[in-house]
Every structure is written in C-alpha cells, then in structure tokens.
Amino acid sequence: MLFLLSGLNGVYSQFGFTLVQAIARNAYPEVAAARFARLEKFHEHYKNRGDKALVALIQPGDSRIPKLLQKTQSIVVLFQDELTDLVGTIMIRDKRSFRSSLQHATWMSANFAWFAETASTLFYPQPHLDSRLVPLIESLSGFVGVELDSEGIETVFKALGLQSTHADVTVGEALQAFAPYIDKIRGEIERLNEGELALLDSVRTYYGRPTEVETTHQLSWPVQALFEPQQRDEPFEAPIEMVGKARRLLTGPAYHLVPGNWLVEVVIAIDENWSENKLAFKVFEGALNRSQLETILPGQGRLALTQAFTVEDVGRPISLAFEILEGAIEGRLWVETIRLRRQGTPLVS
Image (cartoon, rainbow, N blue to C red):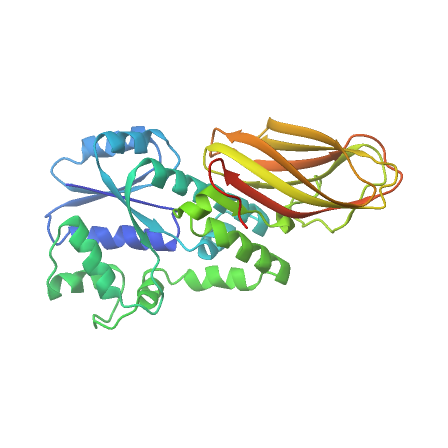
C-alpha cells in the first residue's frame, strides 16, 4: 500500500506525515516512511519497500513526479503549512535573515502551488488551532481507507506525543506536543520589527494560500519587498533620489512564481524630474532578462508600466529592475504598486 503526501516541510506537514504513519500502523503490520524530493529517490524507496506499506512525503520541486502521478492516477494529500511558521522555521533552521527567509518561503509556496496544479491532490489546510483533533484524524483515516476504533485513535494520539487521549484535545495542543520547538519559531516572528511584520502579512495574503486559483493567477507584491542593489536585506527608503550617474536604482523582490505567461503592472511616481530622464524597466527570471521596456519619465506625476514575461522554472526568482539610463541632476522616484497576473485572468482590483 502506498500513501502519498506532500507539504512545505514545516511543522504542520511533518505533523501530517507522522499522523498518517500512525493511522497506517493500525491497518498494516509493517510501515515504512520516506521523505524525498527527486524522482530517483521515489523509485528507490518504492522498490525497496518490500511487503511494507509506504508513507511517502514528497517535497515539491521535481516536475517529473507529478507527471508520473498523473499517469498512474495517484492522489496526493497536501498539508499546507502556515506561512508565518514556515518563515520562522527557515530563519532558525537555515540561519537566514528575515527577508532571505521570506524569499525562500515564496519558492517553497510556488513549488507547492505548481505541484497542486500538475498532480491529482486532496488539500488539507492547517485547521484552526482551537479545532478538535479527532475529526482531522477521522477525516484522514477515512480517505486512506483505514477504520479506526477508539483504541486506534489512542495510538495516533500517542504517536503525536500527547499524554491525554481525551476527545476534546485540540489541534493546537497536538502541534505543541508534537513540536515543542514551535514556541521558539513563533518567538522568532514576534521579534520582527513593525515593517517586517507588515511585509510578512502582505506576502502571506497570497503565498499563504498557494492552492487557491485567485492567488496563483493574480497577486500583488508589496512595494516594501523591493531593495537597493547593494542592500538586499534592507527595505528601500522612498523616494529614491535619482541624482547621480546612470545606474540601477531599485530591484527585487526575488520572489517565485509558478511557470506560465504573466503580466506585470507597476505604477511609479516621479517628482521634480525636469530634465526628463530615461528609465529602463526590466523583468528577470534568475539571471535571464525576460522583458524590458524603456520610457522617458515625465517631469512630475504617475506612470503605469506593463510588461508580459514568461516564467519557465519555478526555481528561478523573479526580480524587477528600475534603471536610469543617463546621469541625473535632479528628480525623485518611487514605486506605488506592483500587480501580477497569469494571462487570461483579471488583474487584482
């Protein structure tokens, strides 16, 4: 028997992985568990399972795996980690800065969304922390075809580290018992400054719901995610002074998108640019220049710039670049909004 799961490798997906293993052990004498990201490892674990039931947690990223699962008509249970917890986990586990962790979380989220689009899946978002654990166990056991009596449910509770087997135990209590370090993760988030918390909340609006069509097809990037080229870990201070030599004024956010054809619309504001400097607006996928336009900036006012571009690899970050093409003796510039959509769907209003 093969149980296929996927998640973002955060607390909730690890919790779901353990939960399904415990359920499976009530029906099969031997259960093997495996985590992998590459198709070769999938084949290896499947071949070596013998007579054991295999509970497999697939880490999204290898496009060959969902293609295989489509051919075999296999269904994957998706456990969606809470983006805030995921960012805190990356900060602690990988010792990354907040902004770098957030960029990495968008890569994980976009991979997860792409996996959900290209495979047959059943979605299990993280329940409210105050919701009861038993209905989640019963729902999962019903889907995987394992009937649990009260003793079976008790074995699942114990596998999660719970001392109590009372029916009123909540998901929050179960997560705390399973992963006591979750307090450290949340403490890392609580130490963020006001600007970082606002940025996280804005990104969470879209990347925190990666399997919903309205967020995989249209989204807004927060302007505060942009940065000056030499200061990737610091937000830029608006407005940007244009005075100086020709140069790149602003870039970022180095966030990730699912593959496809996209449109990006940015609105910029200009002030005291009486010399009418020329601006280049570029879109990069990793190091690849996917699209570029040049325009003469007005002396004052607002300007909407729209470009089409293609994302081929979810693993390459998308960055916008704003460059003045000649030296400036005056002028200020700032970005007001960044909106994106996959072609064929409306822009975010």
